[in-house]
Length: 493
Image (cartoon, rainbow, N blue to C red; front, side, top):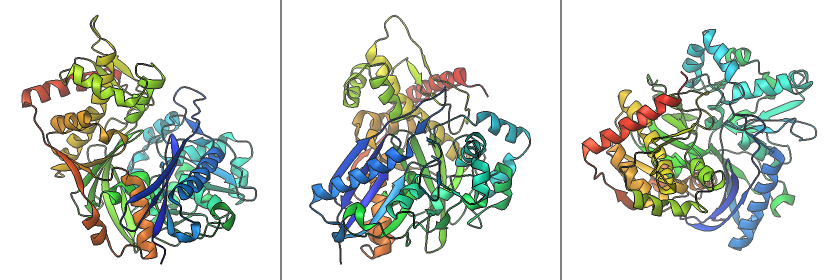
């Protein structure tokens, strides 16, 4: 049996491919950044063709680096930036417009109207989500209303919709597979997470023709074979999950009460709630954790739009640093008691504020403020935002004693220590921090027999370092009070 797995990790700023062996060990990785388009304030777009081209390129490069042939692969797992919306022509495979990215806020006024008309209760009840530009439904409606002839063509069945997983699958299989998985479906605001179907009432509310939609499969399932021309031989696509769900799986958070927090472009904290879809009273999301063998597992999630992207802005926008790795040195110089606060509401604020009109700010500036203080504030903003989520989770009555962390910022010891100090919980960092891609590989491995069970995957998880709180309560409360004041100043709600 082939014992290698290829994970496609298609993110917001780059496409990656990682080859894993049967022990979940990384063999080779390839990564390629792609262009970000900002046509107007609050609008964010990607070129879907560039996403596909970069994905194919890194798959080929990773296999070459690993010295592995396509015929050596047991299967491919896909994980992806969620909510990002692509609509394309079924005949030609050409997108009708740039992809509208999850961060995009162009449908804020439509969302405001839907909420003022009293529709949010229905959306929350069926999907676990709020009405917000973040989710795919209003993005699809915008495309159909703003691309000439698109609505008529969609109703005639000539167009296809997909989140990025579906778009990649369509291309990998040369147009043979139009599927998504339950986790990505659950982020569209069109999918009923209780009966696990596209919801006719929601399709009518958002004016999305059913003919556009992909079929929804389990996270580990038969998604079709790649076209032989792409990698040199057909390979089974055997697993798909949205990036945060894949990270939950990669962190082996399979029991209710286990939580992971991923620090990538954004930050996403997800708490497993088992077979219970618990409704949040504090503006968190009820979502799918994963679905295996037809059985849904649910989670509560808090979404932060800007985490690592804040450091990217400090590097590329303000040019205060030349590499993100420099930030730890600045933070060690300044220390935790930093009077400067950076609220990175570049495209609004996510959970628990859900304010699409908020915009970023740097507060607490004095004549003594320098680069080090602003960079440190950028790092701290990620931790403060996580505390917002943890506080909301606890107010919902859920217990959270520790968090498993992953993503690019998780390797920064200073940030992880400040995180556990400000949260007052233990923070566990795994030996493998690329848990999003690992989760996709695990799903493909479960479907193809490389892995036998979730229990086997749990046994493979290893902690590299545990961070324990060591901050005086008075300082913790003072720092966080300053953050809450800063957030209040940028909010429009």
